[in-house]
Image (cartoon, rainbow over all chains, first blue to last red; front, side, top):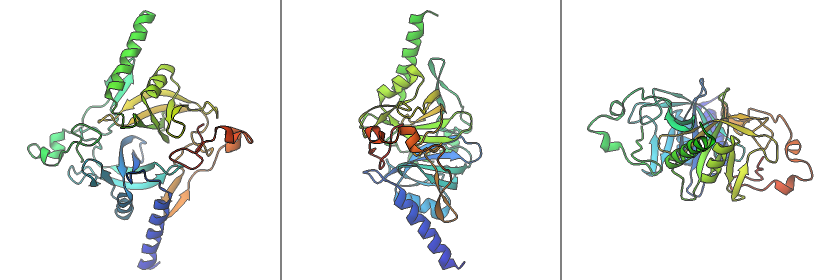
Length: 159
Length: 159
């Protein structure tokens, strides 16, 4: 297969998947990231069409930050990259599931998964501890330089 | 523990988890359903506060249908119930993860998971076949009676 044919195949796949996705009124689609081998659900974030294209083209997961209103290349600040293994789309095209290999931790709190709080025995409990400190992920004094409040969370940082 | 104390504990847990959830402008939160033992991601849907309360109180998963604008008790039509094993909330409170036991299939197409389309080798392919027919799930002639188009999908049925 020639390079041109490969590019055409890639472009066809991108066009195919983009044609299946039903972006919302804001041009976004929710995206679930799951560790490909353990099945652990790591996080949920959002993509626009450009983020989908970049993720498929580079193999590194790129979201769309609703607070910063721009592409959010996961790990660009924290080094905690997500490598794409497979992109899936659901039956009605309004949610994506990414199978990924997560380097380090997915959560800005330093935990492996963002879903570390559970209802157990009638109480809300933390079921996972940070593996690294947020300071180690984002730097001490420099944290405010890139730690912006997300539209959906207080002080949510984009790692 | 008295029945009253049990009820108070349950109410406290509900108040605790509801206080952590950041519902969107429409009063909804996205919810990921994952099979508790296999790790399979089954579907993504939405809940309002009432759906969260009912799910915690009954142990049967209840969503909010954006198209029908009302509670959607998963399986009430199709019989494909979801039994709650654990409810988790993410770091910024804007997504829920439910560990469930899914009876039968989660997807209205008759597939176990809604995420049955994947990008592989430069093409979009189906990676799972229906385990039951939609007609078996929803009835033949009666399908139109409860099969409403969802706001997020063409002809999406609420099983």
